[in-house]
Image (cartoon, rainbow, N blue to C red; front, side, top):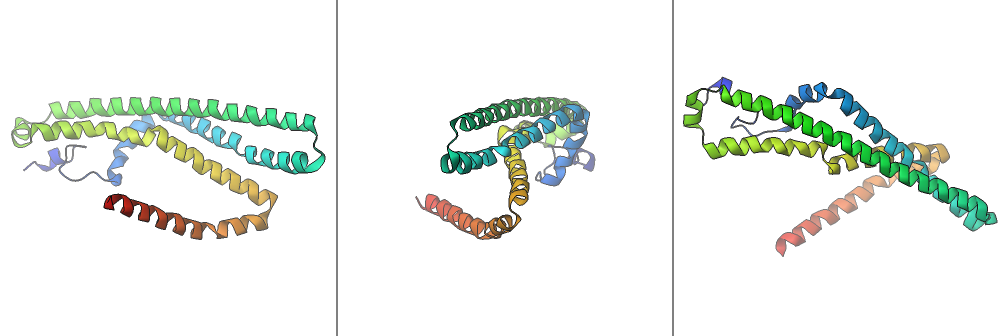
Length: 205
């Protein structure tokens, strides 16, 4: 059995890793907080740029296709929409770059500290622990990069876009916003039931 001092070492404990143990990342993120803040700012800018795009589409349909059919005004709106799409792509790429940079720096620092702790462990630890287990747990450090992956970043962008779009919808029509929000629980239930049914059908196959 490992003593308490050894078992408290991150990623070398026999205890299953859970989200509460992710707090060990905070000091490392704090070390690169400037880069993290820059990445977060670009993330917010990306979401803000995408917010007016649906509204511009509304203007195109209401005032151009269904209205006076002003081709020049339509051209202006198309150019503005294209600029917003290009800007969103650029800022999204910059945000992803900085988050990837934070990820690599955090993982590099974490690995360095982990190896230093491993080298300070007593020989008794290596006699009692299996080599494959130690190597596997060290490899799990790479899994922490998931929290800075493009998938997580895109989900964050979608979340902020939803919030900003909701605020804009409330500004345009508060009553319609409440109607839209009221059907979200039913929409979630239907999607959830469909997803579970799809998973069950896949397992049966």
